[in-house]
Image (cartoon, rainbow, N blue to C red; front, side):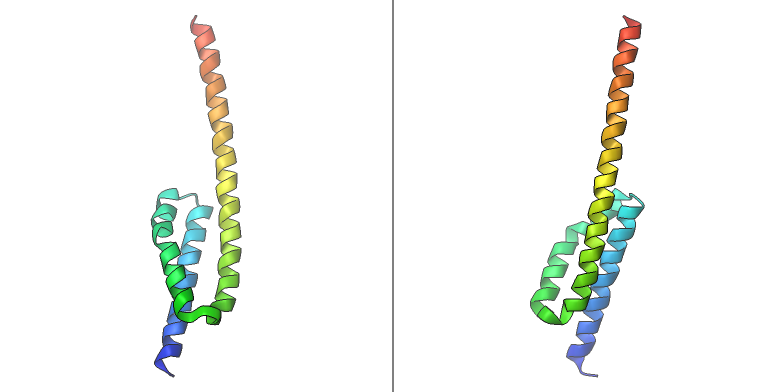
Length: 100
């Protein structure tokens, strides 16, 4: 197998593995792990696209699906955090009224 094919297949596996690791971190709400993975993601993806272009077509489809799921996880987490903050604010306000 030519070296360029091996390099392409290796790059596909690396991209998919990284994308799945980011997805798993988002699903488990491990935002520290997600942030660490995200810091290198864009440059990793750009480099692969520059090097292999259209040959990554099928991998890019899966990465986009992962990204949509990640965005949904982030939105859900933000909604829960906003609701918790509102609940805490309400509890604090009630406590202050009680202590007066």
